[in-house]
Amino acid sequence: MSKLLVKPSQPDGNGRIHAITPESAGWTYVGFEVYRLKSGQNLKQATGDREACIVMLSGRARVGAAGQDFGTIGGRASPFEPDPWSLYAPARSEWSLQAQTDCEIAVCTAPGEGRLPARVIGPDQVGQETRGKGTNTRHVRNILPETEPAESLLVVEVITPSGHWSSYPPHKHDRDMLPHESLLEETYYHRLNPPSGFALQRVYTDDRSLDETLAAANSDVVLVPKGYHPVGAPHGYELYYLNVMAGPKRVWKFHNDPDHEWMLKQA
Image (tube, rainbow, N blue to C red):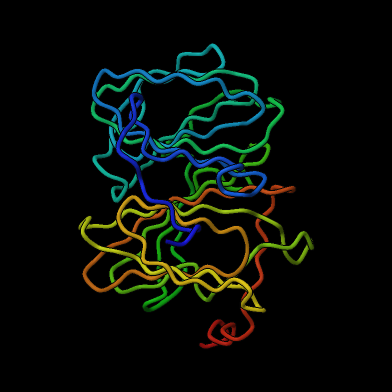
């Protein structure tokens, strides 16, 4: 199996099904975990030298960070529903969560120094937009874009309708060449509706030294260390993915594959 495709494990004692670190991914910045918690279960983590964005994929939980109690957040039944809630915890702090219902949460991390306060990111703070047209249409929820405070993290949810493409035309962000392109590692956490489905994702570079096409099942993670990374949802299956990006500069500037950029110029 490709090293870029990470399958979920059975939940450990804390409910964790994914534990991706910079060391396990072979890169520098992005960390990503997913937990499936039972109602009443508690989870607590120290952030160390990394900031964290805890995304409520489903369920409700009472949360706190950096000594503050933020009360209960969340509420959606699945990530395919709108209105995501998240918790931002700075580096050199601690966050905690008590599940009020069964929950699925994603813990997104990247390097930080702890310069920002802890806060809740409610649905009213999440910018929503529709990108593309025709079968390239997808719906974006900007949980932690570069316009909102964070030190390294960029976090976004995307819903790709059945039969549509996303992250398309193919683009990449693997060179520190601002203002034209930024260097950002990226994870894709895939969920399918119905869950028996799959998504197709290709990760490739201009010289094809990396060129892999992956079939991602429900709850799989695809690692994008470099290269272009389009993804498609087959007919009959709606695709959700959670993107986490980080790099040396907190800017999202991408470069389109010139072989496919022509379609952006169509009326």
